Image: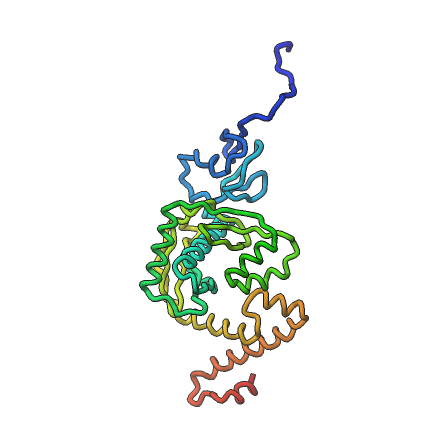
Length: 309
């Protein structure tokens, strides 16, 4: 009993800290190192790629700095949180590449499509040609090959607004007028900075699986599905679906709610009830046109349609 080691005070922190994995294994590393450095020793990892981790019950980015002993659970692309981190980072890579190749145009990530993709369109310019889409994808892969760091900074709100004003991002400025916190988290890749609601991978080298597909007057950014995180499959044609979203977009423009900020304005001005009523009327009108489109003498006069709606 006399030889038992008793608790004692130490004069300084240990240089190393330990992280405990779900299977009980322990990784020791320098205090203040990024989470990605600790997980990089998992050479025998055979599951989906790791893009984040849960640290002491909280979702963290791989750039998160480990300051004390803790338990961690890797988050992969096969999980809901992991797939969102990957897709969000992939959009940022696309935005940066587009900004570098077409600095005078604006890109709109319009809506998602089935089987894993986002439909994208150029705003204020001509649609990209097949060659331009190919060049854009090639530039994205070039940035992936360089494994560039995706930086994260918390900046004063005024600084963020000044940056968006310089870039003529009017929608972002409009949206941020409702922000109550005095700061904003911006991510940066090369010279491009943007605000994204959620976490990112720490560098472009994680974003190997994607494809750009020319479609209509836009293109599709294809990303892997959760069940096949490192594989892409041929995508079916989306002609009718894209036409439907075009109609939906024109409705939003006619209602002056073609952005989140505009919708916030409608709610703030207590005009949301009118928006809902007009939306329902447009929807019923569209149903009427569809039901009568196969009739021998379909109604084409707008006054007749509005009356029946």
